[in-house]
Length: 101
Image (cartoon, rainbow, N blue to C red; front, side, top):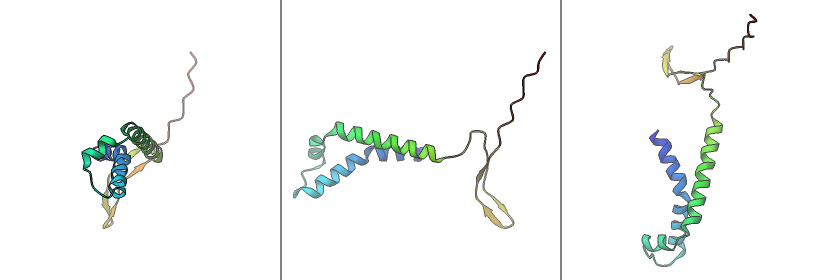
């Protein structure tokens, strides 16, 4: 869970970090972080960070093909080899026709 939060914070702050690096390399003299942040277009960086974070959330969530009904099998040693953890797909039960009284 902590990894997910850190990844989201990173993608949210990425446009701001790129902006600070761009200004630091573009200007001849380092004015200091507070001076750069005070001149930064914070609203645009906020919107860009939010869009990037939402885009990565959508991309990573749609990449997972596990169903909520899938069963997780943890890693185990079989035949002297380590088998990684994996999910087993459990098919949906067939719908039963309603019984007529």
